[in-house]
Image 1: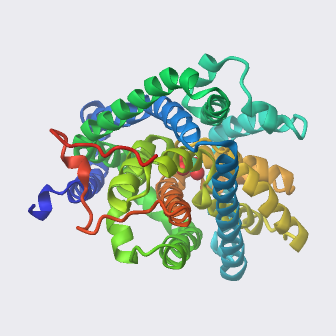
Image 2: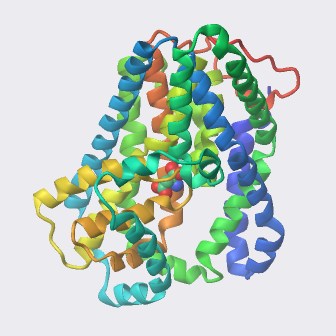
Length: 450
Ligand code: ASP
Protein backbone atom coordinates (compact mmCIF):
# COMPACT_ATOMS: atom_id res chain seq x y z
CA UNK A 1 0.00 0.00 0.00
CA UNK A 2 1.48 3.41 -0.92
CA UNK A 3 2.35 5.45 2.19
CA UNK A 4 -0.24 8.16 1.57
CA UNK A 5 -3.05 5.62 1.75
CA UNK A 6 -2.10 4.64 5.28
CA UNK A 7 -4.40 6.18 7.82
CA UNK A 8 -1.77 7.61 10.14
CA UNK A 9 -0.11 9.45 7.26
CA UNK A 10 -3.46 10.84 6.19
CA UNK A 11 -4.08 12.04 9.75
CA UNK A 12 -0.60 13.62 9.87
CA UNK A 13 -1.32 15.41 6.59
CA UNK A 14 -4.68 16.66 7.97
CA UNK A 15 -2.93 17.82 11.11
CA UNK A 16 -0.14 19.68 9.33
CA UNK A 17 -2.54 21.28 6.84
CA UNK A 18 -4.82 22.28 9.75
CA UNK A 19 -1.84 23.88 11.48
CA UNK A 20 -0.76 25.78 8.38
CA UNK A 21 -4.32 26.86 7.64
CA UNK A 22 -4.78 27.95 11.28
CA UNK A 23 -1.71 30.17 11.19
CA UNK A 24 -2.73 31.74 7.87
CA UNK A 25 -6.35 32.18 9.02
CA UNK A 26 -5.25 33.79 12.29
CA UNK A 27 -3.02 36.32 10.56
CA UNK A 28 -5.53 37.02 7.77
CA UNK A 29 -8.41 37.53 10.22
CA UNK A 30 -10.49 34.59 8.99
CA UNK A 31 -11.61 33.69 12.52
CA UNK A 32 -15.31 33.97 11.77
CA UNK A 33 -15.08 32.06 8.49
CA UNK A 34 -13.10 29.31 10.20
CA UNK A 35 -15.57 28.90 13.04
CA UNK A 36 -18.51 28.89 10.59
CA UNK A 37 -17.15 26.67 7.84
CA UNK A 38 -14.11 24.74 9.00
CA UNK A 39 -14.49 24.09 12.74
CA UNK A 40 -17.83 22.21 12.40
CA UNK A 41 -16.07 19.31 10.64
CA UNK A 42 -13.79 18.97 13.65
CA UNK A 43 -16.74 19.17 16.02
CA UNK A 44 -18.63 16.48 14.11
CA UNK A 45 -15.61 14.17 14.29
CA UNK A 46 -15.19 14.84 18.01
CA UNK A 47 -18.92 14.35 18.66
CA UNK A 48 -18.88 11.02 16.82
CA UNK A 49 -16.02 9.78 18.98
CA UNK A 50 -17.67 11.02 22.16
CA UNK A 51 -20.96 9.52 21.08
CA UNK A 52 -19.53 6.04 21.26
CA UNK A 53 -17.40 6.57 24.38
CA UNK A 54 -20.03 5.66 27.01
CA UNK A 55 -21.42 2.56 25.27
CA UNK A 56 -17.85 1.50 24.50
CA UNK A 57 -16.67 1.77 28.11
CA UNK A 58 -19.79 0.01 29.31
CA UNK A 59 -19.79 -2.87 26.87
CA UNK A 60 -16.04 -3.44 26.80
CA UNK A 61 -15.61 -3.38 30.56
CA UNK A 62 -18.60 -5.63 31.22
CA UNK A 63 -17.41 -8.13 28.63
CA UNK A 64 -13.77 -7.62 29.71
CA UNK A 65 -14.44 -8.26 33.39
CA UNK A 66 -16.84 -11.13 32.79
CA UNK A 67 -14.39 -12.76 30.38
CA UNK A 68 -11.68 -12.81 33.03
CA UNK A 69 -13.39 -16.00 34.12
CA UNK A 70 -13.26 -15.63 37.88
CA UNK A 71 -12.82 -13.09 40.61
CA UNK A 72 -9.29 -14.29 41.31
CA UNK A 73 -8.16 -13.41 37.78
CA UNK A 74 -10.06 -10.14 37.98
CA UNK A 75 -8.23 -9.12 41.12
CA UNK A 76 -4.86 -10.26 39.74
CA UNK A 77 -5.15 -8.34 36.45
CA UNK A 78 -6.93 -5.45 38.18
CA UNK A 79 -4.24 -5.21 40.85
CA UNK A 80 -1.45 -5.34 38.29
CA UNK A 81 -3.12 -2.69 36.14
CA UNK A 82 -3.80 -0.28 38.98
CA UNK A 83 -0.30 -0.90 40.38
CA UNK A 84 1.40 0.13 37.12
CA UNK A 85 -0.98 3.08 36.74
CA UNK A 86 -0.10 4.47 40.16
CA UNK A 87 3.62 3.70 39.68
CA UNK A 88 3.89 5.53 36.34
CA UNK A 89 1.79 8.46 37.56
CA UNK A 90 4.07 8.85 40.60
CA UNK A 91 7.11 8.66 38.30
CA UNK A 92 5.62 11.38 36.10
CA UNK A 93 5.06 13.58 39.14
CA UNK A 94 8.60 13.10 40.41
CA UNK A 95 10.02 13.91 36.95
CA UNK A 96 7.84 17.04 36.77
CA UNK A 97 8.88 18.22 40.21
CA UNK A 98 12.59 17.63 39.59
CA UNK A 99 12.40 19.53 36.29
CA UNK A 100 10.46 22.51 37.60
CA UNK A 101 12.74 22.83 40.63
CA UNK A 102 15.93 22.66 38.60
CA UNK A 103 14.86 24.73 35.59
CA UNK A 104 12.92 27.28 37.68
CA UNK A 105 10.75 28.56 34.79
CA UNK A 106 8.86 30.90 37.14
CA UNK A 107 11.81 33.26 37.33
CA UNK A 108 11.51 34.39 33.72
CA UNK A 109 8.03 35.95 33.69
CA UNK A 110 8.21 39.78 33.80
CA UNK A 111 6.04 41.64 36.31
CA UNK A 112 3.92 43.55 33.70
CA UNK A 113 3.11 40.30 31.92
CA UNK A 114 1.93 38.80 35.20
CA UNK A 115 -0.47 41.66 35.89
CA UNK A 116 -1.74 41.66 32.33
CA UNK A 117 -2.40 37.93 32.35
CA UNK A 118 -4.20 38.08 35.67
CA UNK A 119 -6.52 40.78 34.32
CA UNK A 120 -7.20 39.04 31.01
CA UNK A 121 -8.21 35.71 32.48
CA UNK A 122 -10.09 36.89 35.58
CA UNK A 123 -13.45 35.60 34.26
CA UNK A 124 -12.12 32.18 33.32
CA UNK A 125 -10.43 31.73 36.67
CA UNK A 126 -13.62 32.48 38.57
CA UNK A 127 -15.37 29.79 36.58
CA UNK A 128 -12.67 27.19 37.26
CA UNK A 129 -12.58 28.17 40.91
CA UNK A 130 -16.31 27.73 41.27
CA UNK A 131 -16.11 24.21 39.90
CA UNK A 132 -13.14 23.44 42.13
CA UNK A 133 -14.80 24.92 45.20
CA UNK A 134 -17.75 22.62 44.73
CA UNK A 135 -15.28 19.75 44.65
CA UNK A 136 -13.45 21.00 47.68
CA UNK A 137 -15.83 21.91 50.47
CA UNK A 138 -16.70 18.25 51.01
CA UNK A 139 -15.57 15.40 53.19
CA UNK A 140 -12.46 13.30 52.53
CA UNK A 141 -14.44 10.31 51.28
CA UNK A 142 -16.48 12.35 48.81
CA UNK A 143 -14.44 11.25 45.73
CA UNK A 144 -15.35 7.67 46.61
CA UNK A 145 -19.01 8.60 47.03
CA UNK A 146 -18.92 10.41 43.68
CA UNK A 147 -17.84 7.23 41.96
CA UNK A 148 -21.02 5.40 42.90
CA UNK A 149 -24.04 6.79 41.05
CA UNK A 150 -27.59 6.45 42.30
CA UNK A 151 -28.96 6.54 38.79
CA UNK A 152 -27.04 5.00 35.96
CA UNK A 153 -28.77 6.94 33.19
CA UNK A 154 -27.76 10.20 34.80
CA UNK A 155 -24.09 9.12 34.76
CA UNK A 156 -24.32 7.90 31.20
CA UNK A 157 -25.78 11.21 30.08
CA UNK A 158 -22.60 13.16 30.82
CA UNK A 159 -19.22 12.31 29.33
CA UNK A 160 -17.57 13.96 32.34
CA UNK A 161 -18.96 11.16 34.54
CA UNK A 162 -16.96 8.33 32.98
CA UNK A 163 -15.65 7.15 36.34
CA UNK A 164 -19.23 6.32 37.38
CA UNK A 165 -19.79 4.43 34.15
CA UNK A 166 -16.53 2.54 34.78
CA UNK A 167 -17.75 1.64 38.27
CA UNK A 168 -21.13 0.39 37.02
CA UNK A 169 -19.50 -1.65 34.26
CA UNK A 170 -16.94 -3.32 36.55
CA UNK A 171 -19.61 -3.96 39.15
CA UNK A 172 -22.04 -5.48 36.66
CA UNK A 173 -19.26 -7.48 34.97
CA UNK A 174 -18.18 -8.82 38.38
CA UNK A 175 -21.75 -9.74 39.31
CA UNK A 176 -22.14 -11.61 36.02
CA UNK A 177 -19.11 -13.67 37.02
CA UNK A 178 -21.03 -14.83 40.07
CA UNK A 179 -24.03 -16.00 38.04
CA UNK A 180 -24.21 -19.52 36.61
CA UNK A 181 -22.93 -19.43 33.00
CA UNK A 182 -26.32 -20.09 31.44
CA UNK A 183 -27.96 -17.16 33.22
CA UNK A 184 -25.16 -14.73 32.39
CA UNK A 185 -24.76 -15.70 28.78
CA UNK A 186 -27.68 -13.84 27.13
CA UNK A 187 -26.71 -10.50 28.63
CA UNK A 188 -23.05 -11.04 27.82
CA UNK A 189 -23.92 -11.85 24.23
CA UNK A 190 -25.83 -8.58 23.96
CA UNK A 191 -22.91 -6.54 25.34
CA UNK A 192 -20.42 -8.47 23.23
CA UNK A 193 -22.42 -7.72 20.12
CA UNK A 194 -22.73 -4.05 21.13
CA UNK A 195 -18.97 -3.98 21.62
CA UNK A 196 -18.34 -5.43 18.16
CA UNK A 197 -20.74 -2.93 16.59
CA UNK A 198 -18.96 -0.06 18.27
CA UNK A 199 -15.55 -1.23 17.14
CA UNK A 200 -16.91 -1.36 13.60
CA UNK A 201 -18.29 2.14 14.09
CA UNK A 202 -14.79 3.28 15.08
CA UNK A 203 -13.41 1.99 11.80
CA UNK A 204 -16.02 3.95 9.89
CA UNK A 205 -15.55 7.12 11.95
CA UNK A 206 -11.79 6.93 11.55
CA UNK A 207 -12.16 7.23 7.80
CA UNK A 208 -13.18 10.83 8.43
CA UNK A 209 -10.28 11.44 10.82
CA UNK A 210 -8.03 13.37 8.42
CA UNK A 211 -10.79 15.92 7.72
CA UNK A 212 -11.86 16.00 11.38
CA UNK A 213 -8.32 16.53 12.57
CA UNK A 214 -7.88 19.34 10.02
CA UNK A 215 -10.98 21.09 11.38
CA UNK A 216 -9.96 20.64 15.02
CA UNK A 217 -6.44 21.95 14.47
CA UNK A 218 -7.53 24.89 12.32
CA UNK A 219 -10.03 25.91 14.98
CA UNK A 220 -7.59 25.43 17.86
CA UNK A 221 -4.90 27.56 16.23
CA UNK A 222 -7.24 30.39 15.24
CA UNK A 223 -8.85 30.53 18.67
CA UNK A 224 -5.52 30.40 20.52
CA UNK A 225 -4.26 33.26 18.39
CA UNK A 226 -7.69 34.97 18.69
CA UNK A 227 -7.04 37.08 15.62
CA UNK A 228 -3.75 38.43 16.87
CA UNK A 229 -0.72 36.23 16.31
CA UNK A 230 1.53 38.86 17.87
CA UNK A 231 -0.25 38.42 21.23
CA UNK A 232 0.28 34.70 20.94
CA UNK A 233 3.95 35.23 20.19
CA UNK A 234 4.54 37.49 23.18
CA UNK A 235 2.59 35.15 25.45
CA UNK A 236 4.64 32.21 24.24
CA UNK A 237 7.78 34.26 24.75
CA UNK A 238 7.01 34.91 28.41
CA UNK A 239 5.68 31.46 29.16
CA UNK A 240 7.99 29.67 26.77
CA UNK A 241 10.27 28.36 29.46
CA UNK A 242 7.31 26.97 31.42
CA UNK A 243 5.98 25.26 28.29
CA UNK A 244 9.43 23.88 27.54
CA UNK A 245 9.61 22.44 31.08
CA UNK A 246 6.26 20.66 30.64
CA UNK A 247 7.22 19.46 27.17
CA UNK A 248 10.59 18.08 28.36
CA UNK A 249 8.80 16.19 31.13
CA UNK A 250 6.20 14.75 28.75
CA UNK A 251 8.94 13.82 26.27
CA UNK A 252 10.86 11.97 29.01
CA UNK A 253 7.70 9.99 29.83
CA UNK A 254 6.85 9.17 26.22
CA UNK A 255 10.33 8.61 24.79
CA UNK A 256 12.23 7.25 27.79
CA UNK A 257 10.00 5.87 30.54
CA UNK A 258 7.43 4.02 28.41
CA UNK A 259 10.03 2.55 26.03
CA UNK A 260 11.95 1.24 29.07
CA UNK A 261 8.80 -0.54 30.25
CA UNK A 262 8.21 -1.88 26.74
CA UNK A 263 11.79 -3.18 26.52
CA UNK A 264 11.65 -4.74 29.98
CA UNK A 265 8.34 -6.50 29.69
CA UNK A 266 7.54 -7.05 26.01
CA UNK A 267 9.33 -8.19 22.88
CA UNK A 268 7.99 -5.31 20.77
CA UNK A 269 10.76 -3.02 19.51
CA UNK A 270 10.44 0.65 20.33
CA UNK A 271 10.08 1.84 16.67
CA UNK A 272 7.42 -0.84 16.08
CA UNK A 273 5.63 0.30 19.20
CA UNK A 274 5.48 3.92 18.10
CA UNK A 275 4.46 2.98 14.57
CA UNK A 276 1.65 0.85 15.97
CA UNK A 277 0.18 3.50 18.25
CA UNK A 278 0.62 6.52 15.94
CA UNK A 279 -3.08 6.83 14.96
CA UNK A 280 -4.14 6.95 18.62
CA UNK A 281 -1.46 9.53 19.46
CA UNK A 282 -2.53 11.73 16.56
CA UNK A 283 -6.21 11.56 17.50
CA UNK A 284 -5.32 12.31 21.14
CA UNK A 285 -3.27 15.30 20.04
CA UNK A 286 -6.05 16.74 17.93
CA UNK A 287 -9.00 16.03 20.23
CA UNK A 288 -7.36 16.73 23.63
CA UNK A 289 -9.55 14.00 25.07
CA UNK A 290 -8.47 10.54 26.17
CA UNK A 291 -12.15 9.59 26.39
CA UNK A 292 -12.81 10.51 22.78
CA UNK A 293 -9.61 8.74 21.72
CA UNK A 294 -10.45 5.53 23.60
CA UNK A 295 -12.04 3.74 20.62
CA UNK A 296 -8.90 4.35 18.57
CA UNK A 297 -6.63 3.40 21.48
CA UNK A 298 -8.41 0.05 21.72
CA UNK A 299 -8.28 -0.48 17.99
CA UNK A 300 -4.53 0.08 17.67
CA UNK A 301 -3.73 -1.87 20.83
CA UNK A 302 -5.56 -4.94 19.63
CA UNK A 303 -4.83 -4.84 15.94
CA UNK A 304 -1.41 -3.23 15.79
CA UNK A 305 0.18 -4.22 19.10
CA UNK A 306 -1.54 -7.58 19.42
CA UNK A 307 -2.95 -7.04 22.91
CA UNK A 308 -5.67 -9.63 23.53
CA UNK A 309 -9.22 -8.36 23.56
CA UNK A 310 -9.59 -9.65 27.09
CA UNK A 311 -6.80 -7.42 28.40
CA UNK A 312 -7.48 -4.41 26.20
CA UNK A 313 -11.17 -4.28 27.00
CA UNK A 314 -10.39 -4.18 30.69
CA UNK A 315 -7.18 -2.13 30.91
CA UNK A 316 -7.88 0.59 28.34
CA UNK A 317 -11.32 1.91 29.34
CA UNK A 318 -10.04 1.98 32.92
CA UNK A 319 -6.84 3.69 31.81
CA UNK A 320 -8.60 6.34 29.76
CA UNK A 321 -10.44 7.48 32.86
CA UNK A 322 -7.93 6.98 35.67
CA UNK A 323 -4.41 6.82 34.18
CA UNK A 324 -3.24 10.31 33.33
CA UNK A 325 0.52 10.58 33.66
CA UNK A 326 0.75 13.60 31.36
CA UNK A 327 -1.93 15.44 33.32
CA UNK A 328 -0.24 14.68 36.64
CA UNK A 329 3.14 15.87 35.36
CA UNK A 330 1.60 19.04 33.97
CA UNK A 331 -0.21 19.70 37.24
CA UNK A 332 2.97 19.32 39.29
CA UNK A 333 5.00 21.61 37.01
CA UNK A 334 2.20 24.18 36.84
CA UNK A 335 1.58 24.30 40.59
CA UNK A 336 5.25 24.92 41.37
CA UNK A 337 5.61 27.32 38.41
CA UNK A 338 2.71 29.46 39.66
CA UNK A 339 4.21 29.46 43.16
CA UNK A 340 7.56 30.54 41.71
CA UNK A 341 5.99 33.40 39.74
CA UNK A 342 4.08 34.61 42.78
CA UNK A 343 7.24 34.41 44.85
CA UNK A 344 5.95 31.66 47.16
CA UNK A 345 8.55 29.09 48.09
CA UNK A 346 7.24 25.59 48.59
CA UNK A 347 8.80 23.41 51.28
CA UNK A 348 9.76 19.79 50.52
CA UNK A 349 6.75 18.52 52.47
CA UNK A 350 4.42 20.73 50.43
CA UNK A 351 5.90 19.33 47.24
CA UNK A 352 5.42 15.82 48.60
CA UNK A 353 1.85 16.80 49.22
CA UNK A 354 1.56 17.70 45.52
CA UNK A 355 2.51 14.11 44.66
CA UNK A 356 -0.19 12.67 46.87
CA UNK A 357 -2.92 15.04 45.77
CA UNK A 358 -1.97 14.92 42.11
CA UNK A 359 -2.15 11.11 41.96
CA UNK A 360 -5.73 11.37 43.18
CA UNK A 361 -6.46 14.48 41.11
CA UNK A 362 -5.31 12.81 37.91
CA UNK A 363 -7.56 9.84 38.67
CA UNK A 364 -10.46 12.22 39.26
CA UNK A 365 -9.71 14.28 36.14
CA UNK A 366 -12.31 13.65 33.47
CA UNK A 367 -10.95 12.46 30.13
CA UNK A 368 -12.13 15.60 28.33
CA UNK A 369 -10.37 18.75 27.11
CA UNK A 370 -9.09 21.17 29.78
CA UNK A 371 -10.17 18.98 32.70
CA UNK A 372 -6.62 19.00 34.04
CA UNK A 373 -6.65 22.72 34.67
CA UNK A 374 -9.80 22.53 36.79
CA UNK A 375 -8.23 19.88 39.01
CA UNK A 376 -5.14 22.07 39.22
CA UNK A 377 -7.19 24.55 41.24
CA UNK A 378 -7.78 21.86 43.85
CA UNK A 379 -4.03 21.21 44.06
CA UNK A 380 -3.20 24.92 44.30
CA UNK A 381 -5.71 25.45 47.08
CA UNK A 382 -4.47 22.52 49.06
CA UNK A 383 -0.87 23.69 49.02
CA UNK A 384 -1.83 27.26 49.83
CA UNK A 385 -1.06 28.89 46.49
CA UNK A 386 -3.74 31.39 45.35
CA UNK A 387 -5.67 29.85 42.47
CA UNK A 388 -5.84 33.23 40.76
CA UNK A 389 -2.34 32.28 39.63
CA UNK A 390 -4.08 30.09 37.10
CA UNK A 391 -4.33 33.20 34.96
CA UNK A 392 -0.66 32.88 34.21
CA UNK A 393 -1.03 29.64 32.32
CA UNK A 394 -4.58 29.63 30.92
CA UNK A 395 -3.49 31.16 27.62
CA UNK A 396 -1.18 28.30 26.79
CA UNK A 397 -3.36 25.53 28.17
CA UNK A 398 -4.69 24.27 24.85
CA UNK A 399 -1.38 23.23 23.23
CA UNK A 400 -0.23 21.70 26.52
CA UNK A 401 -3.55 19.87 26.82
CA UNK A 402 -2.98 18.37 23.37
CA UNK A 403 0.45 17.16 24.40
CA UNK A 404 -0.49 15.82 27.83
CA UNK A 405 -3.47 13.96 26.36
CA UNK A 406 -1.07 12.34 23.86
CA UNK A 407 1.09 11.31 26.80
CA UNK A 408 -1.95 9.97 28.70
CA UNK A 409 -3.01 7.81 25.77
CA UNK A 410 0.54 6.57 25.13
CA UNK A 411 0.77 5.52 28.78
CA UNK A 412 -2.46 3.53 28.46
CA UNK A 413 -1.16 1.58 25.46
CA UNK A 414 2.09 0.82 27.30
CA UNK A 415 0.25 -0.53 30.35
CA UNK A 416 -2.06 -2.61 28.15
CA UNK A 417 0.99 -4.14 26.40
CA UNK A 418 2.82 -4.83 29.67
CA UNK A 419 -0.21 -6.39 31.37
CA UNK A 420 -0.92 -8.47 28.25
CA UNK A 421 2.72 -9.61 28.05
CA UNK A 422 2.81 -10.70 31.68
CA UNK A 423 -0.45 -12.58 31.15
CA UNK A 424 0.90 -14.22 28.01
CA UNK A 425 -1.69 -12.43 25.94
CA UNK A 426 0.45 -10.26 23.70
CA UNK A 427 0.80 -11.37 20.10
CA UNK A 428 2.48 -8.65 18.11
CA UNK A 429 1.60 -9.22 14.43
CA UNK A 430 4.81 -10.47 12.81
CA UNK A 431 3.84 -9.13 9.40
CA UNK A 432 4.33 -5.63 10.76
CA UNK A 433 1.82 -3.04 11.69
CA UNK A 434 -1.45 -3.16 9.87
CA UNK A 435 -3.32 0.02 10.47
CA UNK A 436 -6.49 -1.90 10.05
CA UNK A 437 -8.71 1.06 10.55
CA UNK A 438 -8.47 1.85 6.84
CA UNK A 439 -9.85 -1.51 5.89
CA UNK A 440 -13.53 -1.17 6.56
CA UNK A 441 -15.15 -3.32 3.97
CA UNK A 442 -14.89 -6.96 4.63
CA UNK A 443 -12.38 -6.66 7.43
CA UNK A 444 -12.73 -9.74 9.56
CA UNK A 445 -12.46 -9.19 13.22
CA UNK A 446 -10.63 -11.88 15.04
CA UNK A 447 -12.45 -13.86 17.64
CA UNK A 448 -11.59 -12.72 21.13
CA UNK A 449 -8.99 -14.84 22.88
CA UNK A 450 -11.04 -16.05 25.74
N1 ASP B 1 -7.47 16.40 28.26
C1 ASP B 1 -6.85 15.44 29.13
C2 ASP B 1 -7.28 14.04 28.73
O1 ASP B 1 -8.37 13.86 28.25
C3 ASP B 1 -7.15 15.67 30.56
C4 ASP B 1 -6.50 16.96 30.97
O2 ASP B 1 -7.09 18.03 30.77
O3 ASP B 1 -5.37 16.90 31.46
O4 ASP B 1 -6.51 13.12 28.89
